[in-house]
Length: 205
Image 1 (tube, rainbow, N blue to C red):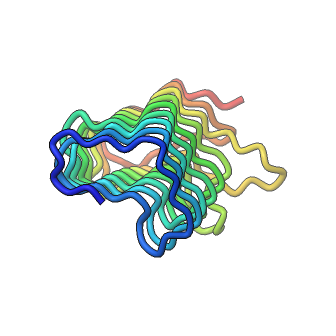
Image 2 (image 1 turned 90 degrees about the vertical axis):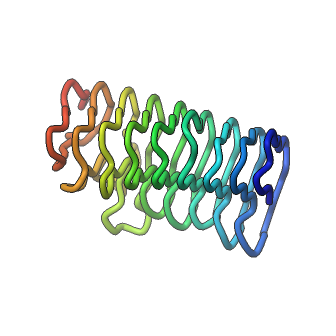
């Protein structure tokens, strides 16, 4: 665990079978890259109240794969893989302005990505397929609570399983509002319930 580190950097760390969260950072400004967490009882990666640059990491068979809560502006989650986890692949909670680019979320038990009470998140060019393996109400991306003014662009929600589990590409809860969901690819039509959101020009082959 790193706590209030001014310029922290974790590179190429491998954590397996840990009883809690594998990699945890609270406060400060840190970079995490090329790390791997596998089969942990807690989350693969936990980032709390910090500015984080999380690039090219892997979380498999943990609770949540990546959890970012109360992050500082300019935090970025890029080119990571989160698969086969028991909950969400990625969860962003109260993390205004967080950017998630070119990540992969696949075969997680619940949502590929969940955005909770977060404004101005940018989710771009992520691959989200085969999530909701627990066959509940999971989806590719969920906009939850007061998620607002978030941008979902060029994400791929195609689920090519013979019996797809991820039947909902995007779930926008009624409490979310003013989000923009455009230019995404999905086998299912994208619909939203939020207020004053723009949902258009998505591609359904």
